[in-house]
Length: 227
Image 1 (cartoon, rainbow, N blue to C red):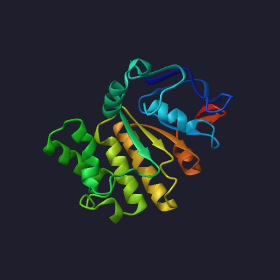
Image 2: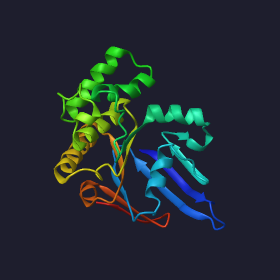
Image 3: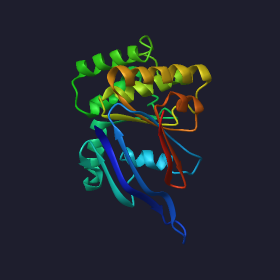
Image 4: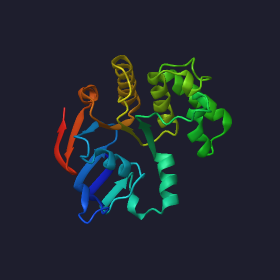
């Protein structure tokens, strides 16, 4: 069952006299439980596509439906609320709040959702165990390694029980061992809990784990392969 449907999606930047098409007529759909990688050279449009999927940016044209909702019909505040309750994000720069502990970072999105304190704490502790760092809940980001910070970022992305998780170059700042561990965790969550992951990546290690590879170049889909 498709949770995301994209039809004739375009994104045009008019900062110069010549329009630049970051996306140019994208048609795609994603089913629940996918483990998909969007790949392509720098400037191909993959991060723009991920940002539009996540409601962080709006398209110039075309339509995107997520879980039956037409994203183009939402006002900015509605889009923020929808994003909060349906979409998880993992960024290459981690984007953790430095003054909060790992557990508090994970709880933060649930606090925005209005979840009770006990429920937030229980969910955060459970997720810290799932990503393999049950003993680091009291540590602040600056006390964690890059791999540990990215595990916290994955746990935070899952905290709200989103329909899917978008991961933008999540392994870019990690060494080989941390990358392997992180991908194993995400693959396990995908297989055991049916969490949908969509990656934007240059990393061959991510591509090897992905079960679908979508190649984008010059804002267009060149290939869409299931592996």
